[in-house]
Length: 140
Image (cartoon, rainbow, N blue to C red):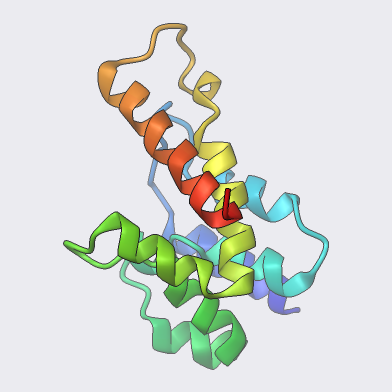
């Protein structure tokens, strides 16, 4: 039941949002969630961008799904003007957030979703950033 509630909340929070390729944004959290078996990981994957990208408050997530889920979603929520290194440190400190972030980064590296062959300089820079983040999270 909680998984259905998480999907409903993510769908509502991302309604009308598009990814960089122009497709419905909800496809991204659905993809990330599809890579997990554990229900809590699936829920965090579905909700990993709702606080950062919509009006959903962390209190609502805690009330609906409990502290464990809320803490993982909070760890994955980048604060305004927060340094990326500090953000990644927080993500790494939460086991669920860390695993979900790794799949999130993996999916974000799939630039074929953009529907074109050439990458911009900004996209190439983002690839380096994501690969560095993966190395940090894996401790390599």
